[in-house]
Structure formats: structure tokens, C-alpha cells
Image (cartoon, rainbow, N blue to C red; front, top):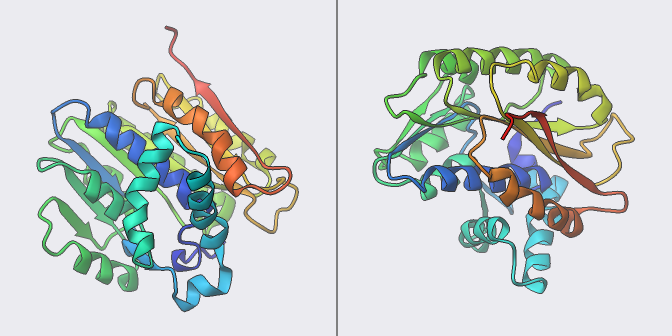
Length: 282
């Protein structure tokens, strides 16, 4: 899966990923203590929606553009969706879609800190330029998976690791992901770990989910959005977010939004689910 993000910025997967990201950071920001975010595959930070790459796929038109139109016609919106659309609107109005580092930086407070890892030089250079004057954000041209050992634990006790790989290794990527999460939990057991993953045929992910359920964490769930039936291994039919150690009651903020995302961006056969892989007894 060759996933150069400029071709896919603002698609349905970005919507799900960034809505979850902002909701998680907002939950962390309820308390005054600072938080730390490690973004292991940060990309270039923002993407022009009129670029040659974006024009070739038109994925933003089927993603964020459809959602914005749907949202304008269905007010009042649920809080997590309204929050996301408010954060994205200034950027899309200017012709860009914001990546996770930019959205996180705009959500961060003065004492919060963000570490962005990007291995590819052509992606890392614009990312460094974007945050050259922001002391809260550090940009590292390095392997993000290795950073789950090298940069954890942070001095801040609370925070999030966002893992958003390109899945160029396809199914084998999940082995690397699981090793990284396990390493990160060993060094920062109270940290939140959020993984984005593509869905072609969901049944192929079931062995990975069984392994995830055995991680040393008490609470693990997935939120998934399929914009079309998962009946073809040749295309991305949807995506999901895996949350390990999610903030308390975050699932209650996210689950009501998933049907709206399916209604706004889905075709016939679209569906969604929030599924617990491990859950501590109340």
C-alpha cells in the first residue's frame, strides 16, 4: 500500500483519525497538568487541496467536503463533530487540509509538548519549516517506531502516542505496530496509544485484534468507519482507530458521532462500530 499522504489528505480516514485525535487531546486538557504527544509518522503537517496529487484522487471531495456540507445542513451537531469541523474550517477555507501535527499544535496549551517524527526528508523539511517558531513542537527526522523507546517516557506524566503509518509493508506492518505499542507500554504504561489502520476486508484484521487484546492494558477499543462494503482487497473501504488506555468516557463522546460520519461520507452499505477488545470491570 503506497500511501503518500498528499494524495489522500482530507479523506474519510483523515476525518475519523483527526476527530479522535482532537477528542483525546481535549480530554487530556480537562486537567491543568501538561500533556505530551508523540506523533510517530507526522508527514508534512498540512496539504494543499489544489495540488496535483490531491487533484488526481479527489478524495477530499468525498471526505471533508462532503462532511462540511452535511454538517451545515444538520445542526446542531454532536460536540465531538462540531469541535473537529471548527478546527478544520479555517484551513480548508484557505485551501489546505491540516495534518495531525498542526491540529495538535493548535489544541496544545503553553506547557504541552509535541514530538513529531518523520523519516522521509521531503516530508520532514516542510514540517520543520511549519513549526520553526513554535517551541512547543519538536520535529525529528527519524524512525517513529524507534521513538517509542527513545522518546518515552516523557517528563510529562500524561499524554498520547499517535501511530499513523503508511502500511507500505501491508499486513506485515501490524507486527511492527504491535511491537512498538508493547515497547511503548513497557516504558510508559499510563500513556494513551492511538493507532490508525486501513480496512480493505475487515476479517483479515481479526488475528491482529486477538493479539492486541493481550496487551498489558485494561481498556482497549476500536472505532471503525466503512464508507462502502468491505468486499474488495484492492481498495481502502474504510479505516479504524485503535485506542489503548483511552481517556475515561471518550467512547461515549465518539460512538454517537460515528453514524453521522457514515451518513455524511458513506455510500450504500456504509457502516460503523465501536468495539471493546479489553474492558476493565466497572
